[in-house]
Structure formats: structure tokens, C-alpha cells
Image (tube, rainbow, N blue to C red; front, side, top):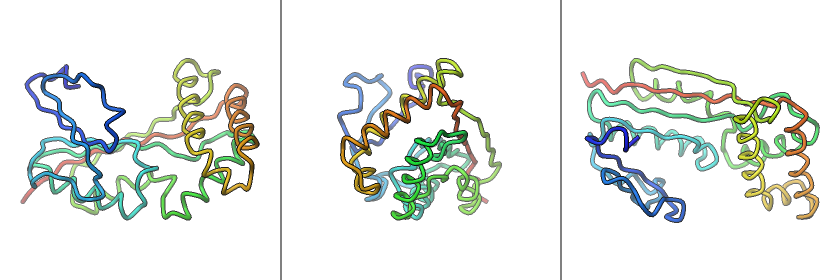
Amino acid sequence: MSSDYKKSKFTGIEIESSIVPAILPFNTRFIYHNVLDGIPFYPNSFDYIFMRSMVLCFNESQYEQIIKESIDLLKPNGYLELCEGEVIFHNMGPISRRIFYSMEKILRNRSMNPLMCNRLHEFLAKHKLRHIQQEDVMIPLSPLNGKIGELHGLNAYYSLYGMKDVLAKHMRLSKWETERLIEGFLDETRTYQMYCKYTRVYGKKIVT
């Protein structure tokens, strides 16, 4: 986006410097910071703020607090846009159901909502944004549905691998058993046309 809009300035916040490209467009900068410690900008600083795929980073109260702080940072007539996907998938096979029902319990035990996408509109309205728009799209996780489905399924597979120790502990499985289970999920993406919902919501800050 920063390459398309060269007259605008873009600022990103990231907690891990290792995932940020070493070379950035001239109008882009990154700040390495934990937003749970507060977002380090003055009120009314930004015309547009975008956040996505943070459902596994915050519990519900933290997520709402980040939304509130982001709205404070918007200039009058600025926009906040959020995008989240469901962590619980549709049309799962038996192995996938076992994994993701355990995942749901893990998240709920941490006050995290695997279906946070269903609350985004509510949060924007609660904190007084106006002209709120919501778009829902179903994204496949199976190569049976083409390249997007294949890549989305692989992304879910690698995400599960990143959480395998947490899953193993919760499910009382060995590391080997957990890895076999995750491989089973990948196999099921090739036979079940699994999918999940992604929700995009945006609203405008109007000061009266």
C-alpha cells in the first residue's frame, strides 16, 4: 500500500523485529513495541488505522482496549479497519474437529475468543464510530478449492505447528502424537472442503 500511495506516510507497530523486511519503502517506518503497554502516539495522529489477525494475541478485554485506544489516535473523520478470521472451521473432518475443539477450550480458558470476528461490529459501535460497514467472506482451506484454499490450509497447518506444545499439554499427548495429529489435519484439507469466515469491519470517527 505504501508503494501505491507515495504521498502518504505509513507507520507499523510490531513486537518482533525479525518478521519485518530489512528494506522498507521511503514513506514507511516500523516501531517495535508491545501495544499492551499502550500505543505510543498522541491522540488525533492518524487518518487511518488497520489491524488484522490478532485474535490469538489478545484476550477479549485487551482486544477491546486496543480498539478504544486506536479510536483515540484517529483524527476526526479518520477510519479504523479490522479484519479477523474464525479459529473454528466449518466442514471439518474428525481429526480437525478434535484439534480445533481443543484449541477452542485453550483459548476460552485464557479469556480469548476464537470467534472474535463476530464482535468487531459491536466494539466499533460501542466506541462511537459511525457509518460502520461489515463484509464477510468464506475462505477455503482445501486445495480442492484452488490455490487460495491450498495456501490457506498450509497457513493453518504451520500455525498449528507453532502451537503444538500448547496443544500437546492440553490434549495430554506426546510431541510425536501431536505432530501426527497435525499431519492428519493437513491430510483432511485434501479430502474435506473446509472453510472459515473472515470478517472485515470499518467505521468512521465523527466528532460533534
